[in-house]
Length: 327
Image (tube, rainbow, N blue to C red):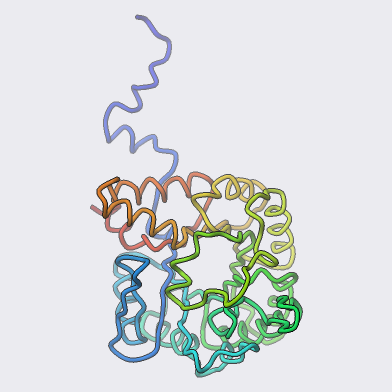
């Protein structure tokens, strides 16, 4: 055979394949979610997320130092709030001496250059497990009242030293309100990474185990997005950018690669994607049963997310991925 083109020439060996690869993973691409709990010298396994842990502040600082040494430059903080502090106002979320605020300060003191992002939503602090304040008569999640509470929460995170707030609540109009509050309070250096297209997904289950934040009634479909919708994601994201979001996020990632690409094509700000707990747990479970190669699945999954258009990836596999990339 005489062919004009032999596509396999560029696949002939690993060196050539690496040379012409269109998508490259880097340690700087990853944001590692970190779960913080009360106490000292505490490292608690999360049963539905094998190999992942909740840590007390002292152990969290140790973990962050290791992350920095590996080349991971960004963490996204979540805290497990004591049940006694939960109510329907979320007031513990803006306690200047609260666990989140302490965690931000401790990390910035220990590793000043680490980029610290903080979750902004009321579900860890809510007695009902919802992302906002509940109208107890109707069960409806109140939008405007929730935004007012989240403004206080955001400002307390900024005062503690957070580099980015990461609103995951999906209330309407909150990004513009957060930007205005940050500007007026002098926190003009604090960024906003908005969960702009966050879908009501079954893949969040293990995360809710990690923080004991599952909704006590109903579901989150009145504020998180319908997974049947695509154009809605673009509309939500464009509004967040117009209101002042510095980075936008699509969540989950693996089942929403088409949405990541659509968002990337629509905006000029960085796009992040959240490789969520259920996606992590599925790979772990299949690997434990010998049904797939865990290391190969990690890199293939993360490469697919980046190839789809994500500039940044929040993933529980960040440490594993960095080690694999370095090996």
